[in-house]
Length: 290
Ligand SMILES: [Zn+2]
Image (cartoon, rainbow, N blue to C red):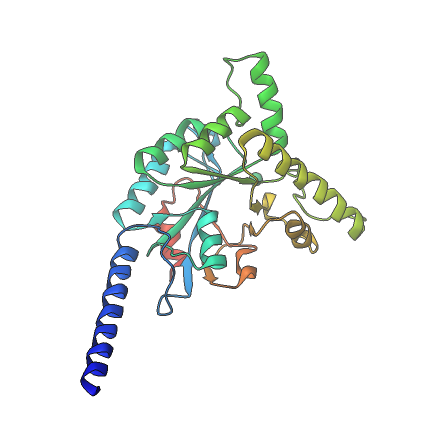
């Protein structure tokens, strides 16, 4: 009887070891997978988020918010050589909400405003380097330039049309998120002087809801993340975001992000580091990874 029990226990232990070993191999064989997170895995992850704006060949736009395609390519090259893996908001959300694994050195690349350089330069580079990025588009600009494109099919416009946004979304390398429908004025999504809380709530709700609807109609995807225009954040905006189903937001505050599984609050007001012309990504990462 004792011997049978001993054999049984040993077999069970060996069996369990084999299962865990197999799952560990599976968990380590790729960048992202559906393997459940086990109790000994990291429950927290440090994630740097880089903020880009314009990618352009035009010298006059280079500076704090404009870099050349060659500068972007150098950044992607650096990330590849140094073992970073690009992830998008869906990956961060899955990590926090469902415990889905993140790669060892995750990084998020974000591009604001929906400039046409996103289509002309960023998409081809992402495809070449097999990297992903997040694009926060302005709804009103997309509507305006889509109409213009219909009138003048061959003309070039400064902002993306819905047709271009759809191609980017369908490529699998681009995650489209919200920069508001028409909030890119001086005060961004901030409360206005003399605006009461209710009026602010309704105005912000209406604006964000319009872009959510337009994205759903045009690309079949409803954004999960709001990128605060100009980084202006007012009290009361989070309530609107949550009411509309947003589960994350991006700020312009510099710093590293610490994501914790099960803590949905950590996905709001995520920090980002701006990438100006002349300061390669290594410089930015060195600054926030200390
Ligand atoms: Zn912006």
